[in-house]
Length: 270
Length: 281
Ligand SMILES: Nc1ncnc2c1ncn2[C@@H]1O[C@H](COP(=O)(O)OP(=O)(O)O)[C@@H](O)[C@H]1O
Ligand SMILES: [Mg+2]
Image (cartoon, rainbow over all chains, first blue to last red; front, side, top):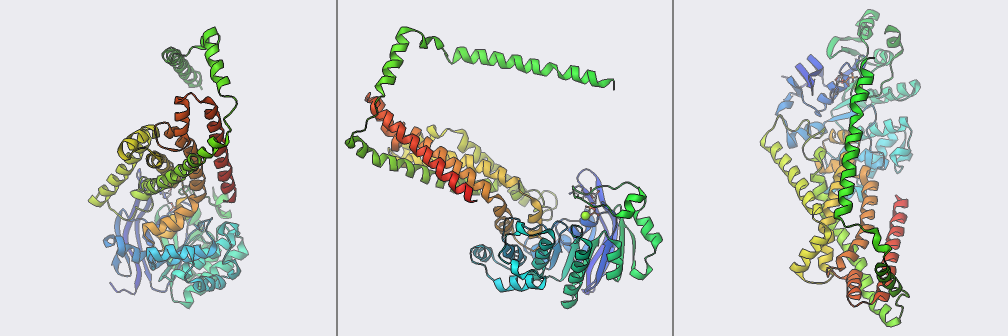
């Protein structure tokens, strides 16, 4: 396996608790520096896939290789080191509300810091300059010392992006990063993510429920539905029929308690 | 449609069963606890009560006595503060280990172990041990702890400090672990995904979320400790309590009144201080 391959999934399957199959026979290859959008209805398994790609959960069966490394062989320190090289932006930002912005941003450094160093930083921030630069890059440099829960949803999403910036990973995973912001801001954030991944040649994978954004900004689009891959193709090959098929049929299976805004075309289909 | 009245009917029997049991327990307790309101109406009983109450008035306010009571008063405050501090030192780490989402299950452990390896078993044991210790510490009343520590280290404030430290450590640890369990796990997952270790996740993701709850519960416990330290004094563990015990034994009820007033002021003061601190959070 050439390490040029960022991700290599082979027959990955994920079953939750009482036989809830979230992902089935999933194959995927993503090259280093590639930019891929994933689309699909709620409950398709997109979040589950991302949580495997960032080593939070393990496949029930099948192979998951990251940079040529079999993830099943990683544990403890080597697992944390792998996680450090993958940055994730979550749908609900997943910031610590009561912490100041700078600490939420600097928590991206934890993988590189010692325990004592990270404790000391809570009292007397180290790498304040790094945090400030990252925040400035995402356009909210002045919020460095604000309390995180005082920011708007869009600003919090930027803090989450700044956290990934200071983490400086090889891969950026963004799980529906724009589902809680208005459309114009959504476009700005997608552009920002693309700019970041371009500048530093990072691999970028984004979950989107807006097919428009996926089609206009990503060269490769993967359609997922009910835990299987429906299509995986160059954007130019995505046809209205494919999209129709992707979003048609069964009632939405809701994910693990996630609030989900149903796209317009879905509501009409049901 | 048909089943609605049936389930109602079958369910409605339980309130009667439990109500009946409750009345039985109540009646039995009344008898066994020797509750006897008659004592308030008999001439002799009234006289005893009257003598006791009038004996307490007026409070002893002579300068000599008050001066003597300064040290025990300060001692009570010190016992409550030191005791609570030790309780935190015991309760915090044990409470953390007794938190299942920290110790062995949940999103922070999804990826660590496949199945039940020996390391996993070890973690579960540690968790069980912490829970067991916390139960033991808080199931034995602080009064009994004080009694044992007085035997072990002698009379004075130190056994009081130890008793509060251990008994309250058990209570704090239990409640801490419940607070820890209730945090929002999403930020923890996010911090873990940056490659952070368990303790780093704790201090960056967990601790800030629980800090207000932890602080206010600890302060509440400190208030209780002020009162408790007085009770512990009765078995010889220093402070105001020990003075109350001496005064009662000497039939100096005037002094008891003064001491109760001091105790009341201490508890009210602790209440005020902790309310102030909480309002800052
Ligand atoms: N922790 C979990 N426990 C049980 N079932 C889950 C869990 N997470 C996700 N699922 C299930 O897996 C399926 C895929 O969910 P998810 O990955 O969140 O989909 P998406 O992100 O595409 O909306 C859903 O049916 C969901 O109910
Ligand atoms: Mg999702």
